Length: 71
Figure (cartoon, rainbow, N blue to C red):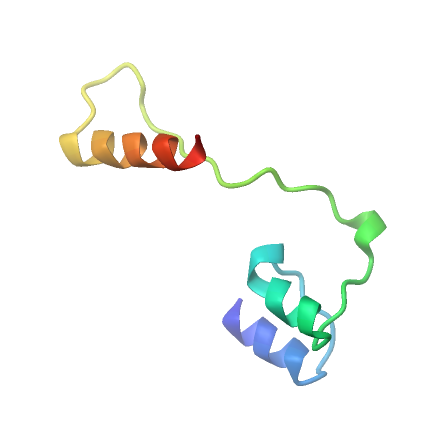
């Protein structure tokens, strides 16, 4: 994705990237959003893990951290 972003900044064409990757460039006018009517909304990342098994302590702490950041 970094290579696509650099190519788009250099005017090499279109790139399909997340808003958080290009937000500063769009705000500064270096890039512009096109085909927004054809881009579905993206609610964010998801974490899938086995919920009914013993979860390792490190994974449990990571899950708790993500939940705390979300709230």
